[in-house]
Amino acid sequence: WLRALSPAEEMPVDGPPAVEEPLLLPWDRFSSWLHCICVVGFDLELGQAVEVIYPHHSKLTEKEKTSICYLSFPDSNSGCLGDTQFCFRFRQAAGRKSSLGCFLDHFDRDAPVCLKRDQGYYYGYVYFRQVRDKSLKRGYFQKSLVLISKLPYVTFFHSLLKLIAPEYFEKQEPCLEAACNDIDRWPTPCPGKILTLPIMGVVMKLRIPTCYDKPGTSQLVQSAPSDSLVSIILPTVHEVDLFRCFHPVFFHIQMLWELVLLGEALVVMAPSPAESSDTVLALVSCISPLRYCSDFRPYFTIHDSEFKEYTTRTQAPPSVILGVTNPFFAKTLQHWPHIIRIGDMKQAGEMAKQMKVKKLKNLKTLDSKPGVYTAYKPFLNKDEDIIKQLQKGVQQKRPSAAQNAILRRYFLELTQSFIIPLERYVASLMPLQKSISPWKSPPQLRPFNQEEFMKTLEKAGPQLTSRLKGDWIGLYRQFLRSPNFDGWFRNRRKEMMQKLEALHLEALCEEDLQLRIQKHTEVETVDLVLKLKEKLTQAEKDQLPVKPGTLPRLQAHIENIILTLPEDLQGILHKPPSP
Image 1 (cartoon, rainbow, N blue to C red):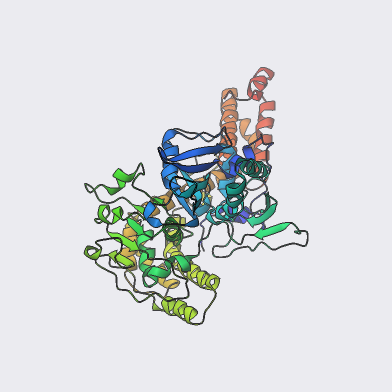
Image 2: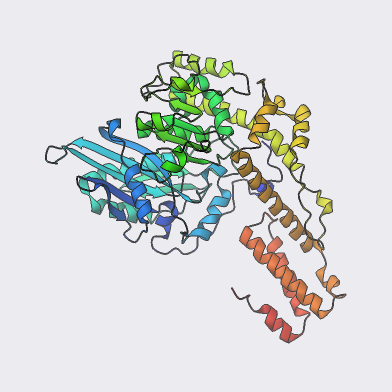
């Protein structure tokens, strides 16, 4: 798995360098995991309403509260009796800055792309309870406990809700206060560390993956003899069960992978928010380790503030994946090019029937048969082996976890076969190290040239790692126009520019600067000091991937140069720069 000039070679074997946690204020630790916890109830006069926000000082705009209200309850037609868990994602109100922004950035740096915080979006993790209650006017008790967070750790937050919500429905607010106090004592969500999180008398143990982990491996959290208190060990914080989610549209997994890779407009019509949100999350994660860069809504309702924007017929449907349960969408989204219809997710023991891809015109109502409704012609030939392997697993009653692992590995290998030629080509855009001179600006990257890249595919294309035949060239051409390519390339470009900056700094540190400044006038020397100080500040801010010891050496160089100058100038240059 190629990462051109990845910072991994400078990484200690056991993952990212330990980040010293600054002294944290009350609620800072809580805020590094959650924005807030909401209770949404149903009022006969008002409809859904946010009854409690915890901690009380948490801020939500009215628009955000409205979004949370509508997204925290299943559509009435879902008929979810008992307890239901699902998740949603909504836009953060514009112009709001996170108070912990820079403090949280260093966790993001070490997180895999799919687990970085979502700029501009919040996730809502819901535990909804609906039970018959004769004493209430409607005859039903309906309430949701909702965790609002920037983190996409769906499995973790659902496990957390299973512990908090049932207690809350019995004991009400004191229980929320206790839970929040527990969370505010947790270590911060640092990738690569084994975290032990006490909550309501139970202890959860987990590890957040890092971008230095080998894709497709998960470092299992082992229970240690000292773990007498640990009650729950989570094998993953974010992965959904792909096999269970794709089971209803099992024969089309490869086509769905293409549609997600290309950022096509997709809608999932499901009987409940739990099934719609799981399926959307499965779709987004099937191209991992590539990040899905467009918008996706695991559960979307007609009250959503983006409803008009996303259902308009005046322009082509946007690059977005929507999960819906309201029958009304069968009409409003009829013009969408790709519709996935999911029936009830049966136990993954029954095998889905072989289904042809259906023409869109056959989709009249939401009770149309499960299947994929599209006119899309896949670029790649169908891989019959994976279908046979999974079918055999069903016949032999292979455990669901094993089926999930087989499918996850299949998607990973498919994505890697696709992305390795791109990684290889992009690495070749990097200037040679010998062209880096300490006294010139760092050299530029060569621009990405589509035709030049296409030529490399003849000898070094996906055929080196994948046995799948088909129109790979057509798939690449389409991908290069997609938001996923744009997001991926921007990220690689930024990493490579930082690598060039880092190499430039390292080259400067190797120079004998004392010798150099003997030829300088005083003005030139002061100019050099200011430039070096600016470089040092920028390097610390961007956390450049420099060799250990580079920045202290540069600091020492600066100090030594300052000492060669007259005292009045030394005093000025030693002053910290004004913010």
